[in-house]
Length: 551
Length: 84
Ligand SMILES: Cc1ncc(C[n+]2csc(CCOP(=O)(O)OP(=O)(O)O)c2C)c(N)n1
Ligand SMILES: [Mg+2]
Image (cartoon, rainbow over all chains, first blue to last red; front, side, top):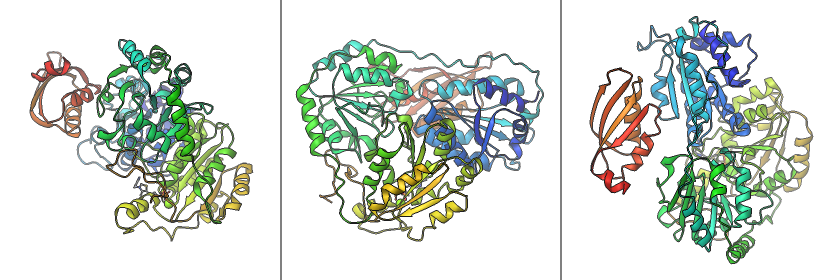
C-alpha cells in the first residue's frame, strides 16, 4: 500500500471516523486514499475553520480531534487554531502535506517551513522522513496529543512519503500506548492537614478536572469537604448544578461573590487550573490571605506564577480522594451564601430593548438538557459564562487561553458531529461571526442542525467597552453599524433565520429556533451601550470590581 | 546570573531550535551553547548556558516538557539553593 493509505489505516486504528480538512497539491495522495475510505471527511471552507471544528469535536467528546491541510497556505491557515488548542490543552492531531523531499529547502511552490512554524503552537511536531517511520510517528502523535496535559500535535508528511510503497501490515501496533501518568501522593497528608485546619477553604476549579475524567471525584470531594467553589471559564459546568456552595466564575468578569470570597479565603485549593492573569487580576493582591494547594498534571504549572504551599502532581482521579480531610466551616459557608445572595444577578432591565444577560438566561432555561453552547469572543462570551448554567465543561466550549474570535461557528460544527443527538448552539457576536462565516457552507452541505444566535451590538463590543472606560471614549475602529443583513446572509446558505429587537419577542423566537428541525440563525439586536459587569480593571485586585451602578 | 544546563536530547532535526525557542520565549538569554553527538549519533550532549533574572526552575520545568529532552541537569550553584 501507499503511505497515504497507511495514514488512513492508522487513523482508523485510533478510532478516528471523522476528520476536518481542505485539499491541495501536497496532500493529494492522502485525499485520493480518502476517496475510498470509511473515514468521513468534512470539507471546511478555510483551514482555520476546519481545525476549530476538530477542537470542537475534541472538546465536546473527549476524543482526539483530527484535521488536515495542504502545504504552504493550507498549513499556515491552521496556525491560529493550533495556538488555540495549545493554550486550552485540547488534544488535536493536525496532518499537513509537504512538498517532496527532493525539492524541500528550495523555496518550492507552496513550500513553507511548517515544522519551524509549529514550534510555538504545538505540544510536539514531526516531519516524517520515510514511509517506514510513518505509522510509528502517527501513533506517537496520538499518544502525545492525549497524554498528560493534552495538546495539539502536528505531523508534516512530504508528498514522496505519501506516495511511497510500504508492505501492508494490519497489526494494531502500539496503537494506544499513552505514557502512564506518574502520580505522587507524598504530599497528600500535608494537604489534608491544611484542609482540616482551614477556616475559610475555597476550591478553585479549572479545566484540568474534567479533562482528567475526575468529575465524579470532584463532587465526592466537595460533598465530603463542604466548601465554596469557583470555576474558571474552562472549568464551568464542573460543579453539579445542585451544589449550593458554588459561587460561579471568578476573575475579570467573574461574579462578585466568587471574587470577594476568593479574596477572603485562607486556603485556596487549585484543581487543574493555572492562575491565569484573567483569573487573578493583580497577582500580588490575589487571594492575599490564602495558603495554596495546587493539584495539576503539568509540573511546569506549579510555582509558575503563585507559590504553592503543597503541590500534588499527577492523576486528579487519585489525588482528590487522597486529600479529602472532612473540612468543616459552617460559618464561612453561610458567609459565602450571604455574599451570593447579596450580589445576585439582576434582570430587571428597563425598556423594551433586549437585555442580553436575560436573553441568555432564557436560552439557558429553554435549551434541552445536555445542549452544547459554543461561544465566540467578546462581551457575549462573558455574558454566556455569567448567565448560562452547564452540567459539564463539555457543554460549554469557549476559547479561553487564546480568546480567538471566529471560534464559535466551526467549533459548533465539530461538536454537532461528535454528539449528533445533542442540541448544539453557537452564541456569537456580530464581529466574531464574520471571522469564520464561510463555515456556513459546511453547515449547508451536511445539513447540520446547528442553532446560531448572533448577539448584535453593532460593535466590537468588548474593545469598545475598554475604549469607553480606559481610552477616553475614543472609539477607534470598533463601529460595525454597517453589518450585513445576517438573516439574508444565512438565507444564502439555505439556513432560515429571524431577527428580533424587543424583549417580548425573545421567548417565541427561542421556541421557533428550537422547534425548527434544521440549522437556524437567530439575529438578536441589542443596545450598543450595554456593557459587561462586573469588571476588574487592569492592575486592580479582584475585590476592586467596577459594577454597573458604579460605572 | 548564568545557569549551566547539561542536556541529553534525541538527535532530531528541530531539537536545538526547540531548546532555543523555549529559552527565548520564557525570557532567558543564551550565553553559550555546545553540542556533541553521542557515539551512536542518536542522541546529543548539549551544554546550554543561559542568563536571566527569573528563577531558573521556570525554564527547566518547561524544557523538561520537550519530547526530545531525555535528561536535564542544572549544574550551576543555584541548583543546591533551589532544591534545598
Ligand atoms: C482573532 C481576534 N482578533 C481580535 C481580537 C480582539 N477582540 C477581543 S473581543 C473583540 C470584539 C468582539 O466583537 P463581537 O464578536 O461583536 O463581540 P462583542 O464583544 O461585541 O459581544 C475583539 C476585536 C480577538 N480576541 N481575536
Ligand atoms: Mg459585537
